[in-house]
Length: 157
Image (cartoon, rainbow, N blue to C red; front, side, top):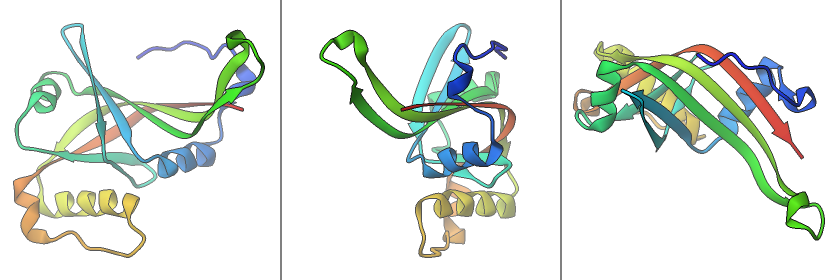
């Protein structure tokens, strides 16, 4: 895991609640995987329960091929991304944003009740109407938990 100090400390997000707010406000998780020095990034729907991240996917495919061989992952969350033209010169242009990067380890969930609970966390990320996940759909999908090892944040604008 990279352990590099942030260059602009004034932009660093250190408050755990603020980090969680950015994750909850994000519409997508960009999941980064790596196998034999070949990176792979994919946008995913996700759920976050305050201590772990969850995602679901088809029972076969490249993500699973990689995760079965290397469960270490990195996730990017962003909120409030906006172009910020601070002057006439392109050299002064920038962006306003808040980003959170999570380093973690992905673990397949196999217990049906745990899968259903994780799918409900994912559903709750995108719904305010208390929709319930149909129990008959649980067996047809892979569900993964990301155990968070490190979380960092940055903001600008």
